[in-house]
Image 1 (cartoon, rainbow, N blue to C red):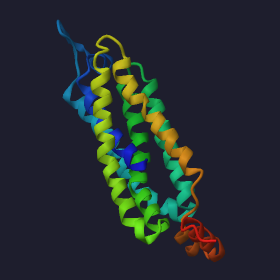
Image 2 (image 1 turned 60 degrees about the vertical axis):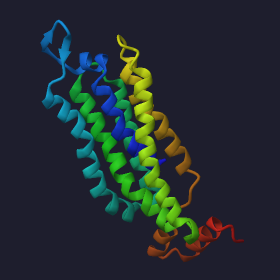
Image 3 (image 1 turned 135 degrees about the vertical axis):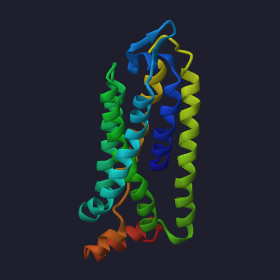
Image 4 (image 1 turned 90 degrees about the horizontal axis):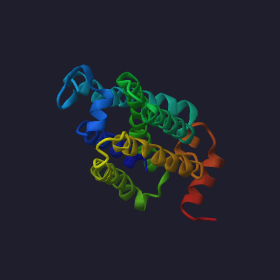
Length: 213
């Protein structure tokens, strides 16, 4: 799910840029002509790159944060940051600055999760399926991009409604809720427990993940 979040967030904005309601909402009113308002290249670049700024910062912060608070609490925290970013984006009416801020917050989440999810899988999954699970994470990034394109293609027919871009952007909330819901049922990383001297707890988690009594 973490990989899917990353891929979906990367892909969803591409479809929005070519939707007329999106351009009307965030375009430059001073550059309006017979065909409507235009979205300046500089504004397009900022909206697009704001996610990357967030992912860069999130990727740098995830290691010290997860080492201090633990893998599971950190993943829940970063998934919550992603949710905040999705809410800010979806609630935007016409402020491209607000949309950029939302993209940056979402980027914090996906940037941190892009490092934490494979780390958590590597530290927790049994050896015989560890490689397949980490590979599955990478595969889900591509699947997320694919789904985002499909949804954007389906909603582009709302040519006069903000629903054209708000539906694909707002669906980020659904994937974030799924991520958070699943995280509450997972244990802490046994390697993190060992790092903090919690040997008994680490043994119990490893036994549970391997269905050993």
